Length: 315
Image (cartoon, rainbow, N blue to C red):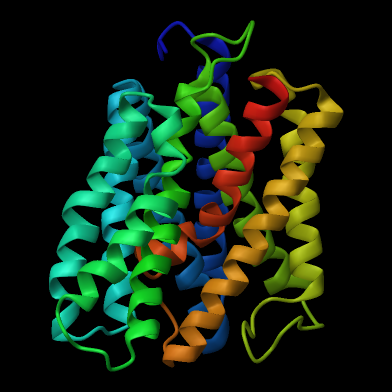
């Protein structure tokens, strides 16, 4: 992938920069007009999110510019931080420490090495088969059977969500699509843009039009108006971005609708985990967004399905 000479990629990145500039100007205007404390809190949160988006976009562009290696390393770090947040949120016992060592320092790095060397046959089964079988074996050798099944499941689920699912995003760079050689970075950018835009639009529609909550006990801020508006808006943008993908406009819109819907379900599942643990966010690493897992919860569910749909129909 050549970031300099790929005109479509530069246009897409220019569009993202333009959207961020527009958002920053709107945030500045709102900041000068708010009068009440409740409105001030909403605008401050919005502006914090926009500032974080600038930083995240810059980091992502730098990773893209370095080619496949940079993207694999970036997502590997994202997985490491997300796994740490997940394990911190779901406490384990002293007997699990050596199992966690394997999860953090063996299984997670090896998964991304497999992505980097494009070993598809092992990449798709390494964690759900080998890691999942190893985790309970290593834990049982510690001799602690209290809550054994629950403790084992927590580690397996953390590996699955934070590492295995997220690793499918940079794995898009390994796809061999006839007539689309050397352009896979645009496919990765398409996924990130559509899924993250869906989250942003759900937030905006929810704040401006949201009245009817979907599951108030799990995610009080998710409303039907926000969810449907966000998914529809992001799907439309996905259809309009067909020229960056191997899809037709209709197919591009349908796939965007699929990943946005999956992203929404991912957010719900993560919200259920947070409610179960009695917290609002997984962490505070990203200003305005919470933790890393809060930012990528939708990507966790969307990335693997997007990868396999594209590979099956176009690879």
